[in-house]
Amino acid sequence: MLPCGRALRPAGLLRPAGLLRPPPRPGAARRARCGPGERPVGRGAALPAGPDLRHFLRAAAARESPSGPQPAPGSAPGTGRVYLETYGCQMNLSDAEIAWAILQKNGYARTKELDEADVILLVTCSVREKAEQTIWNRLRQLKALKARRPRARVPLRIGILGCMAERLKEEILHREKLVDIVAGPDAYRDLPRLLAVAESGQRAANVLLSLDETYADILPVHTSAGGTTAFVSIMRGCDNMCSYCIVPFTRGRERSRPVASILQEVRLLSEQGVKEVTLLGQNVNSFRDTSEVQFQSAAAPALSRGFSTVYKAKPGGLRFAHLLDQVSRIDPEMRIRFTSPHPKDFPDEVLQLIQERHNICKQLHLPVQSGSTRVLEAMRRGYTREAYLELVQHVREAIPGVSLSSDFIAGFCGETEDDHQQTVSLLREVRYNVGFLFAYSMRQKTRAYHRLQDDVPADIKKRRLEELITVFREEAARANEALVGQSQLVLVEGPSKRSASELCGRNDGNVKVIFPDTETADAAGCEAAARARPGDYVLVKVTSATSQSLRGVLLCRTTLSRAAACC
Image (cartoon, rainbow, N blue to C red):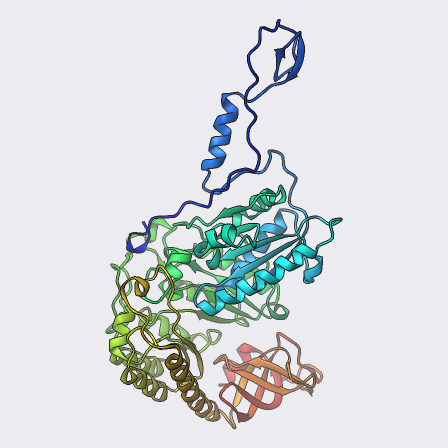
């Protein structure tokens, strides 16, 4: 069973378009010499056999299959060009890479041009209503594109993948009839079969949630910016059951990849020249690999002081501190980040490891959601305002100079003006470097949908959100201005979007840094002056700051290890 007694939903079932032919009427025909699979009918003429009991059994099995109708036996491998669009969080970027790896292995080619595509797949998000509305609008555009497609070309197939697929399968397939295939987050292995069914003119769906699918054996085809950075999914699903959150219902229960498969992927990325890896999960620091028997009896790590969960502690398994230790040892020139954690899962061994390893970024995401203890209780976050602030202080003592980011929800159910002002004051007290702020959007299936009332008017949500954004920017600007005059180690990502004469990258704290694209010397003096390229580490002296970025002058090219040794 899933959280709150929600049973695993079987995949969507779609009947084949054609009906089985009834068996021929028995006749008084003479026996005749027949070929294999033929019956004597009429005056000795051999005709192809009609369906027997095995035909009906196979048809019934196809109708009852958890993943819908099956393509004809012996279907050719996938052909055609696939166009992928990704919406939402980093997990969706990772999912797109997994889906593409599966399709590529099955004979599909990829295109970046929409007009060239034979298959268009949207990797979708259901966290907020606005995200879903964006997808609905895009699907209507694509339906018009499909209608205009020349008859001489193969029919265009459109598919929805990810969280929205699981949540709105019936509406997408049957009521709106905008797509040909629907695949939930745990059904990407089934994409080749679903596309084969769609090629025959039927619609197909598989939104079955899994208790163990992690795609551990699939090496994603990484496509992020210039090959400099990459996301590595280490776990899927979430058990926290926060009252506002749809994730447990669209991505299922927590399950973690084996450590060995994660290390294999990170080593491969290192060999390909990737310089920054972000470990991904809905609750990344509750990682728990139970694949190795000898660690089954290990004790569960303690929660952060003052924090609790809605579920019992789970003993056994290799934990996040072990994984982070092993990943950071693979390549001393590769930065390691992780997101998104829950504040409850920050044992001291994780904080100590971040402080000690020069290639683990001194940047933590501590999503708080609200500054009001009363609202936090309604959200089922498992902590008070005071416990959260105590954790922030502990983190800053353990990791001097740490950069902090957070998530905030404006206008949650029952939020009063006093609750809102407590969130404002928390923003000022903590002074985050990076923030993600949104107005509350009620989602079906969540506890809030069933137990609470979305009683904050839209105009008040909007006003409160604007106030939070204003305060965040003021405090982030002050935090960034404190870096003016300092040298920052920056991983170059590529040209600035606003000027071809400038480069941009990110510092250890994940803040964007912009600087001139000029020739510069190597810090060790071993190489001639040259322009920095994506994937290079450079030292930049900060000359100005805003709430969103830093600007500076280029000092030299360097390495991650050399910069750490000089500090």
